[in-house]
Image (cartoon, rainbow, N blue to C red; front, side, top):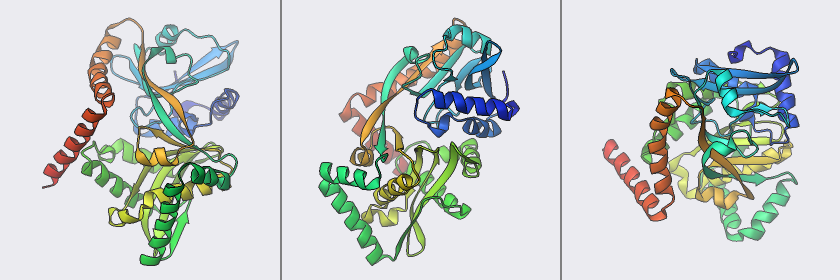
Length: 354
């Protein structure tokens, strides 16, 4: 069992090789750089190294609680989770947890290829993707064929933004720290406005984003994209990219410009720039949203659940997570109730601001 900083460069390179050999999309959340960044702000982050025949055959990044309750590294913000294992490696989950000193391993965005943990999933969710592997023009043509009104309207709003506000400019990889601070402010305000928990009110998340913004690795690069009008930011997004996947993470826009749909314009320009960089896929993440439905070309499953072995720690972990998970699942499965819950959250947020 190692702290992520204790991994040598050879071990990290082997991690990358195993990830490449798995055939799974090279989601940057599954790379050693993400785990290392989490460990800088979450002191209980660990990496279990699985050996077979004297050679590292797998890695399980995780965080460890006080009674051995384990969780995917960065749980709550990481959009792709699981172990990095040599193809065909036979492992017993309970034996793995025992060797790690864990009573459980909780996940909420387990990728579909994680056969070791999928049997322990309690719920399946959808993550939405944009395929630009054949180039942006092909994607735009497909979008035009499927949703001609949506594309025409969005492009018209982009032109109107330029006429009414000023020249529109897009930067795919913006390095200005001020632009990142602006995005965080927008996103925090959005969370509060919609009655949701402000992720950036949690110091470790703010620090994690700051660290990842400075991370430059072939398979894990923090990427801030900004849409400007008349020289001022009107929409922005921070995510992570590998050579083939752009993991979309924190998008937001200035509400003053909402009539121009700057968030949609931003995503179209991100898709265009990603395709030009040789990226195949934009992963929009779990959770239904109108903009995802409008932009997507496909869907992939992700899973939420918890693998356990007998013991007090696992029982306590289950008691702590299961009731809330069941309530959320009950509400999500009933559209009218979900809509009512959303209106209630917004109303509560307005009351807090008044």
